[in-house]
Structure formats: structure tokens, C-alpha cells
Image (cartoon, rainbow, N blue to C red):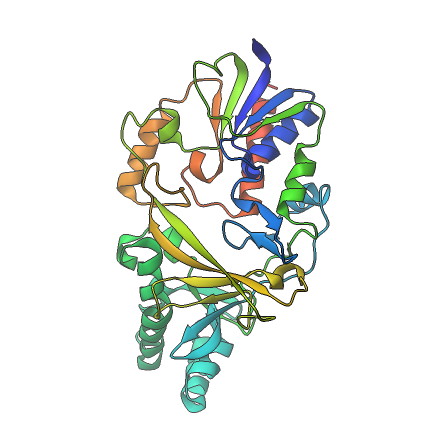
Length: 372
């Protein structure tokens, strides 16, 4: 009987944060995960070349939330890496999101200058305009720019990534691809940015290092076996928890093809996007994140694909009206002592800081309701 113990399903960031908060308040926690490692999709490791590999794609920590920043700083120090993304547009390497610098790199200077003047007249500096909103301008030069950015940066990349046209995708997704009225080339503008100096896995190890936390890997959740817990926190997919009784929630998945090359660097940047070329969306090169030194380098080509149960992993919820209704149907089935959180549990896209923030808010909610 585990009546005084909390069960956390999933050893990714959302799960380990709620586990640590519960343990800190004096409660026992058992964390289980079907994988053979901790840290979920932020798992990283040093390979034989002494390069820190992000197994499930690049993860860059960034936040404006002071509470989140202070929490993670308890368990790791960060470098001062600020992420930039390069895209190959018309054979030219340029930074995205598309900004004023990008204008001058891909367009003739006279045209770029004219468009810059109009951008600054029509929009506030240092603001982001979603590409679908940007298309509504009446000025001919701005219409040209909107069409150019839409076709060269947004259309083909989005279609590859989601397997759908941009119009079929929820606005919360399209808003992540803006025109940035700025000369700031950074991908994120958050106050705090960086990569844990010893990697994400080591950070998660320290979060889990508490006498009231027990971890079991290679362990599947079974409702009969794990029924006698004080509370259950599930960071896995809500449809799976309920044995798909109403159907499977759609996701996009990702396949990473790793390559080792006998050269110091393969490309000019940590991430290079290919909006219009090839069938992969981008290439990650991991040495850049922690400035690893090696005569070789490791890259991963990222291919987007549909999630197929039992064949690949869930990555990105496909948010639309139909899928949201299905999620809400499952949500109504949640028992009193069961809580869902994380990207899969909430069927919502979270950056790392938002996943931590969500776990913190859930803990405070339980505490304020007298359930802790």
C-alpha cells in the first residue's frame, strides 16, 4: 500500500519539478518512466567524441520568469549561450525570425531600405507581427514582403513540419513564426538564456536527488498495480491514460538522423533551417551549445512525421478545434486525485520554462486547496 505516497508518471521536466516540490513539502514521491533514462525529451549525454548530444533535438533554456530561473539555478549553472537560427533562403544563409537585418541580406539594398522605412512607419520597433496578420497590409512593398516571407520562410517549412497548410493550423502555432521589426538577431529575447554547463540530464539528476523521491525506470503505468497512491500526476498522454476510449489524440512526431563527420564544424551555426530545400526541416550541430572541443562533429537531420501509436514518439500536439474537443472529452474523465500536466498531459505546446511554471502553479493550487 502506498497511500501516503504520490505517483508521478513521467520523468521529464514537468514530472521531476512536481516531484521535487512535493518532496520539499515533506511528501513521498515515486517517479516512474517507461524509458531507460531520466529527463524525458531534454535527455542529453556525452558521446565518444566528448560532445554533449541532445538526443531529442536542441533544447535552449530561456525565460523571463524570476521564480522559474531561481528554481533551475538551484540545480545547475548556465552558460551565456544566446540562440540564433540560420535559414537557407534563395541559397543565402540569413537569420530568422525574419527581421530588418534579414531584409538587407536577401533583398537588393534599395528595396530593403524602402521596405524598412515603411515597416518603421507602420509598426512599433521591437515588436513581432505574426506572418498571417502581416499579409493584411495594403502597401505594395509590404504586400511583396509578406508574400516573400510567407513563401520563402513560412509556407514550405510549416507544411513539412506539420503535414498541413498554414491555414489548417491553429493561430497559436502560426504566431510562433513572426516578422520581427528589429535588428535583434537572437531567436529569443528573454532576460535569462543558456544551456546547463553539465547538461540537462545532470540538472534533472539533482532535481531528483531528494530522500523522499524514488525513481523507477523501464516501468509502465498500470492502473491495477499503481492504484493506492495519495495522488497521481500524469505527464504522459491523457488518451493513453484512459486506454484511448474516445480515440487517439493526434500529434506530430520527429525522426532524428545522426551523422558524425571528420571535421571541426559541419555548418556555420547550431541550427540551420531549410524552409524550401530537402525533406528534412533543419540540421542541429551540438558542439556549439557548450563549446565542446573535438576534431569530429555530430549533426542531426530532423524529419517531421505523423505520430503512429507504437512506432514513434509524440512530440507536438496538433491543436485545432476537433482535437481540442477530444482532449476536453478526456479531461472530464479525470478522477479527483489525478492531475495531468506537461505537453502531453495538457495537450499543449510548452517551452521548458512554461512546463516548470505549470508544475509550480499546480503545486500551489493543491497546496492552497488544503490537499498538500
